[in-house]
Structures are given as C-alpha cells and as structure tokens.
Length: 366
Ligand code: SAH
Image (cartoon, rainbow, N blue to C red; front, side, top):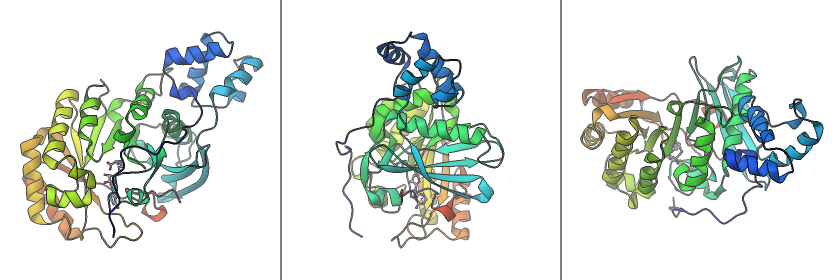
C-alpha cells in the first residue's frame, strides 16, 4: 500500500450558500432584517427550526404567508438524502446524502435501549490518511459548513422522534465520528457544537455531556477546544501506545507524538472536568499484543491519570483493500484483562452497522 499524504487544509472549494443554522442569534436577526422582516421573526423561525426540528416553511402556520416565502431564502436545502440503509432490525440507519454541489457524505443514526446517537460527518472525506480507515483512504474533498453539520443533526433528531428507528426516540447523543477530522475544520465544528448544545430556541439543547468530538490528535486544536467553555467529551484515536507503531497507523503522529497527544488530553480533562476517551481499534498481530496492552495501561496512568481516562476498544471493521483483521476474541479478552489490571476503565464498542458499511472506519460515501 502506498502511503497517502497528510492534508490539513481542505481544497479551496466554494462552501454552500448561507443557511439559518450557520448564524448565531444576532446574525440571524440581522439576516431576517435584511429580508425586510421584523427581527422577532428570527426568533420564531429559531423555535421552528431548533425546537420543532422543521425546515419546511409551509408548516410554520403562525407566520404570515409572505414572511414564510421570504424566510425560505434562509433555509436552502443543504443536506439531501439520496440513500438510506438500515440494519439491526431498523435500530441502525445510514444516510448517504448529497450537498448542493454534488459532494457526498454519510450520517449514521443508532438507537440503544437507553439513548439515541447520531454519528455526524465534519468533512466530506478526510485528509488524515489512516491506512485502516476507508474514509482516510479516500482523501479529502472539502470541509462541511456549519449548517451542513447542524442539518445532519436536525434531520436525525426529527427522524428519531418520528419513529424511524422502530420506536420514537429522543436524540440524546451526537458523536463527531463520521467522515472527516473535526479539528481540521475547527471554526465550523465549534459553531455547530454551539447550535447543538445551546438550549432552544438558540439550539437543540442536547447536553454537552452527550456530545463527543473524536480526533486523530491535533494538539493545538485540542488546547483551543479546551478553552471554548464547551464541556463536550474528547475522544482521541490512539490505536498504539508507542510512536514507532503509531507513526504508521495514524500518520499525523509524525507531527505530534504520543506523549504530546496524551499531555493535551490530560490538559483537556483538567480544563473541562470530563474524562477523555481513548479509541483503540484492535488489529490482529498489529497492535493487540499483551505487552502493548501493558504499555497502554502504563502510559495512560502516567500521562493522563487512571481517573481521567476511559478506553474504548473497537474490534477492527473490515475495509476494502485492507489485509488487516480484527483480533481474535481471546486476544481481545486478554487486552481488556490487562487494562483492568492496570486500573484503566475500558469497554469494547459494539460494531454496529457492519452489514451496511456504517461501522467505524467504513464510511466511504459510495
Ligand atoms: N478523524 C476523527 C473522527 C473519525 S472517528 C478520528 O479519527 O478520531 C472514527 C473512529 O473510527 C476513529 O477512532 C478511527 O480511528 C476509527 N476507525 C477507523 N477505521 C476503523 C476500522 N476499520 N475499524 C475500527 N475503527 C476504525
């Protein structure tokens, strides 16, 4: 396999037209005033959009018809579903959608006994080039706009409420674990986080505790996020406790080493009071050796602190063209046992959506 280059700056391509969800409250009011409408219409529209999860002016019958017609200009359709696939008896749904310029991306919605989670994309494609990830192998097309991210959440929340997952559910969790590296699209992702967590009518009012931003480990951006006053959960895709192996699995490790990433994770945990999640895909005979489990436990204890960290083990999901497999069950159990012995909290993630290529690392928007 030839290594792909790391791409931090998205190709300069036009972003979609301005949308209501791009704007903080003051700018929403200004945009409504520009349309020649009284500013309170902005707040009414926000109640429909964020509160009732609708972007269809036709159903906003408390607004005069003429105002509805004008306001439609602030709600261009940015995220148009083109294909829906479901599995797990309908409890997992993947949506392939197209943007106005034909760019494609995917969103995955999942219902669990106690919660409903949407996994959103922050970029179309990804520039981080991880060799075991289908998105990383496809390269980066462009950043998504704030509204393109927010629209994924709105549509998922409406679908969950309306019973698309089998039974009506309230969307409780949003994870930035779809396509893309969220911290490489920093400003738009942070604006989206504000709309997601702000109470209605300024946002969906989803608790920051239920929101997770996952990163390959862009250290300066982790520190910036820690200072935003948004106590979302940080997940770091570590996949190896040692630089030699991580340089090959997560190529950005050649810029920021394991020790630097873990130090940033520790600062994040200290600043926000939230436990940091460490993602570790178990790959047979690559990163699943018992000695690596011991080393992982040791570096996490030493560099983050056992109380501030939680490990999420992910059995590797198959991707096209990859020769790698998931670890055998016995290997996985031994890995868990050794982390337990080191006093590190650890869970094995269920690999939802494999049958429909919706699981971690499988999103290719094809
Ligand atoms: N770019 C961010 C957001 C994507 S999250 C990040 O890497 O964190 C997707 C998660 O799935 C990451 O932890 C990623 O490393 C992991 N992943 C990628 N390919 C995978 C695969 N084939 N099997 C299991 N997990 C995978």
